[in-house]
Length: 254
Length: 311
Image (cartoon, rainbow over all chains, first blue to last red; front, side):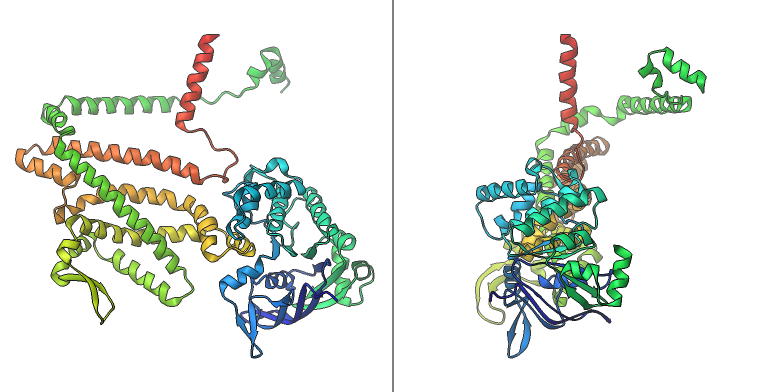
């Protein structure tokens, strides 16, 4: 059996006195598209950020490809890794943010080639060729020399996806990728994500797009108050939720 | 309402639809009055025989003053270079997670911002009185290189150190303001791509912070240009010192001070132009289209003029 891409065991996290994650257990298989849904403050974004160590965890174990994220285990204790080791492990994990977070002082193409050139030391010419390919793949071949401020929200988010893909990740994390978009621009971003899923990319998507979850997702996880309430195939959970809390949430968003 | 519609239709439609701005007779009167006053004052200033314009012309390009101007520009450049580099280092230290480093930076800023620049200049100048020799070696151990402080810290080095280290304390706060102004999401995105902290700072945060840092830094440069005149206290012959030297002998204070102002204004104007282009360079990506520079506008106007006359 191939190892799980993500394996979370009893992950705890608190900000000050607020417990944000109260023991999360999850596994994501290779090629799986997992959608995390739930009310705001339920901890789904925090969990996603823990996966690439943008947040530290307080207790539990979180493995990506059988390697602990941001830590190493010695004598049964977790030791935080050096910054260098953390960034090395992050390279295989792409992340797409709600607010795009494109680098505004760089063109679309410069955004895409920045990490390959700086981190992976890919020659600039080669990086540009691949960057152009990636922009073409997200349908923005003609926007390579545009600055983020000259692009619409949907276009910016597609550049952000291309930028994450440029590092050739084996796992993509999406943190509410369409929540900051005008309704008519949501479709173009979801289309790119769907194509990515069809190519077999392993994805974890925090989203409120139940249609996307139903059609593209392999599994759906409903979180509330820092815990996983319900997991299952999206169609089952969406049409026949077992828990009262899930039912109450879905009745409001569907 | 129908009346205006008919009127709009009757004439040249596009022209009559353009709104006419209200007349402001008061503005014109005020402008005329101010212009008249300016001409009156300027005329009095220029034709005043006591201004000794001949003397101004005589000394405007005199070698001593040119040498002074060169020293002033050199001091400004070196002190600002030291100030900016020091400021970036101090700002990064100040924002470091290590409490000792951030405290150290805080103390530096507290000390150098809290004491008069003149005192600091004199201190560097008289350093040899306290520390006669400076050596390089292992603390409490052997010394490998040793030099006389007086040889090492000349008047010019003392001036650069005094001005630059003082400036670094101010630049530190300017740089910190710039760094804080960059959205946290930018560092997060860079880190998520596997970039190191150093790469994130150098490639992502600082270039964006520069947009905020440049205008106050321009202020600092211009202020520094004039502050260099303080080094007269340690006898460095910069622009104002050399001018004072001349008028202490020929007693032509006013014309020589006019010469000084002339050169300070020329230097600040050149710096202002430089700042304009720097700001454009680092404003990339912030507005959809940058407006043309004055030079581009001039060229466009000239092109249009040629086209018009060719017609």
